[in-house]
Length: 574
Image 1 (cartoon, one colour):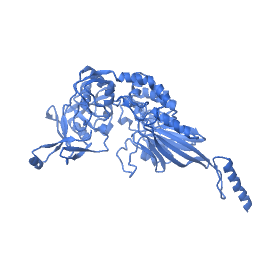
Image 2 (image 1 turned 45 degrees about the vertical axis):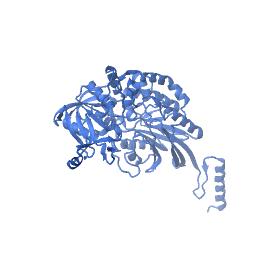
Image 3 (image 1 turned 120 degrees about the vertical axis):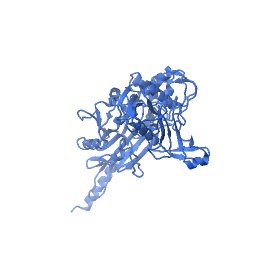
Image 4 (image 1 turned 90 degrees about the horizontal axis):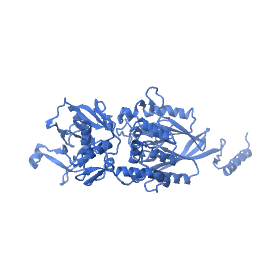
């Protein structure tokens, strides 16, 4: 029988150890044991899109959020803790800002974004879908320049099934083995032209994650598994209802998988402060360095491995932080060169241009894109959208490259496909799904109601035909009076249709385009095509041809009462 005195001496020894040895906690009882503790802070960004400096080169104004400001926040966190800090990113890094794209695409220089991330001390990055926008040679070049690995466990070589990028990286942090796994949204073929990912295949995220998590937990003996997933949530986290994006977003499904401690997401640009979801810590930062996700882990040693005993998390806003002087200094010469290039005049506009109202009425800004697409491709029809509401108004006078980049911020090229008249109507009915009725209670006219689930860069218009859209009719029956050269469109006739490479690959879920025969394509980016058009058509005479409009068809009874055949749309969203 164990003596009471012996037990008391054992408890006293543990208490002394707790006092003398930091990190050792005394536990009483017959199974009393020393428990070690460690702390780890994870910092996370995503969807940086080349935003190195707090300046919007496309609009020529300051930008709140940037890698230079991320650097300041990271330095502050590192200075205030006395334990390891792990800095990670979830991809969409080397596309999206003129500073990055002019440097790498036009001038063949090293990526300023990758260089800045190296200065700050990133330790791993997941490959995003926009990494493929410029093709594999440029992506591989950026990968070679990086001091940290580009991770993607579900991107494999088509011929062998072997990983096309490192699937994971194992890091030792204060004696804790941290496995960092990278995943890429598998819908890259739905957005990119095949040449941009030639020889690669994208596996379902959950399938690849399950396989590689087993490796990290077993042969790599990792204590923690952190997943960098370039994907968003396919379900509303408040009620688990689907949002219809299961083809590109997998994070909710990943959160239900065994073996993941921390799931750091991206892709959808929506701030999600750290929270527990299905027993996994999940988070997502906003785009372009607007915030840094911080997760502080309290780790406990149990059964010869470290486990998460507690945690705290927050989103650290960077937008008002002072930019890091070293990052600014390193990028300054390149930035000056970019500013000079963007300010170069391309031609003159004879009238002012604005994007306000371009989704409720035909407008000159989108008709410029249509004109460029029709002339470059020689197609019968053109499909295009207002890609951003952030395009600044253009005064009559000089038009420079900066405004073109602000009008067309994506690195798309141009494709022409063959479609039938019936398919043309299907395509227009798809885009008309954005409109969700009218509110005509105001004396000033009707206001358009819209479906918030439809991303506004997927609201296309078509040139080369005339048509009306009635938002009050059922989906699939909203396109009225569709005509080609003044005659009702022949459902069996064939037409060539110009659209950007994103649409031609299936982007936006438009019907028929991904399967349609390609009759023409160019590798030139749309910004280059628009710039060339403005130079050759100098001066540019901005005008909308009014080939489409939103209306409410009025019933015979209401027509008799009011004398009007339709209600015009007088107000609504951009």
